[in-house]
Amino acid sequence: MSDLSITAANVKPVKDQYFAAKTVTAGATITAGKVVYLDKSDSEWKLADANASVTTAGKDGLAIALNGASDGQALEIQTEGDIDIGGTAALRSVYTVSSTAGGIQPHGDISAGEYTSIVGLAITTSRLRLAITVADNSTVVP
Image (cartoon, rainbow, N blue to C red; front, side):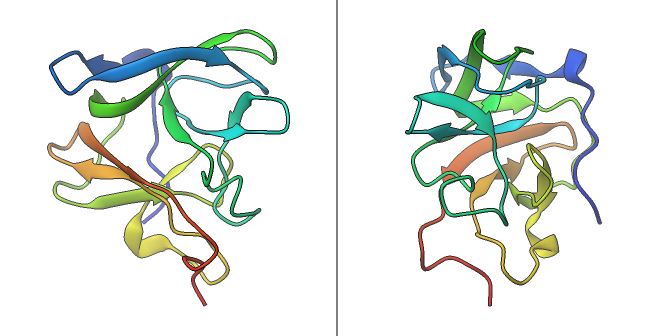
């Protein structure tokens, strides 16, 4: 398998009692549906990456971008609830941060040297239930 192929225009949050989102500052060019992490050094949100470092894998915060933004612009992110991800997912599959910046990959695609940060579970073929569980130093795949 490979990363989810996401159409940014089709990314939409499901605004129910579990929905949690906030507006933050983008630290890179980001499109809707990308996984982003908090860079504490400048308090900006950037594209997550499972094989760069435990920080870029989401140690200090992880979310899904709900809109597009450039460096320094306002970015709405979702941290809880369901999201129509704008792509086709495998039903009941767990998805994690990819080694491609901002990407979402099936759990089974984790490679050696990647940090395992869970993004969510596919509850339909187009909807993820966010279950963000971020990496720490012990979650690197040997």
